[in-house]
Length: 372
Image (cartoon, rainbow, N blue to C red; front, side, top):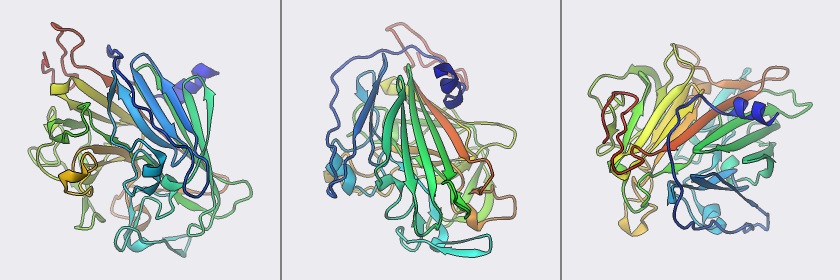
């Protein structure tokens, strides 16, 4: 049964040699300002130590080979106040909905506007700022459950986020279903909002990172990050071209949604820091992935490391504003209806080194380049 659980949660991937070393700084705090309790959960393998909080079902720390790979706060008190969604499970609907309105089954829904005039990441009281119920359901497998009866969506759902650690691979699994007896349909779009920095030094910008995506298309957006409805083709040499190996993130701001290719079952991405000998390979069965380079963190070095472009988010998900786009080939969003299959998606994050010894050579699986 345990092996079956692993197969269901995990994604197909490659293997790599890893090691564990160095001290670990622990996340602390289990009581919110409201008096609610949010317990801490930890998992550890030979190469990775990862920490979670029931607050937002959040990934608050991931250390690979003894080095921190995520930008986050070290206390619950700081995390509670944050508006950046550090490491959180996002829902009921991730990303933006234009003007905070959509129509479902001929009924207009009005949502709270928390991103200028738009709705973002579940609103001001989204799942990122709720206390989930955590439980270790198998070795190195933690399940977080949330019952949500959001008045704006007018239906009750039960959501689950499952994290599973297998050696150097972290698997994430998201589920959502209507609560028993619920008759109203609802939209669902879940993701994880971890901020990655593979340098091991969070005071370094991400400009030394390279990114590869196997996506040939992306959504055209307006100046407010809202999809126009047009689907663009990635052209060689443009800032949206991540087919090169890899595209270095030295220039540009990204908050873009790239689409899974029609002939493929998974999105593959690879983020790496060559000079720091670290990479993470992402595999996800979602129809899209949002690339966000922390552009909205303050442009103030005094706020470091919680400032502009010191991390990058890779968010597998359905498309932003999908409830308001029903034509012209726009990828449909997910509608959760009574007596129909529930929402379910998964992604995996595999960490490895380019080199595992002073004379070892590693060849890129994408272009064959010798990282030496």
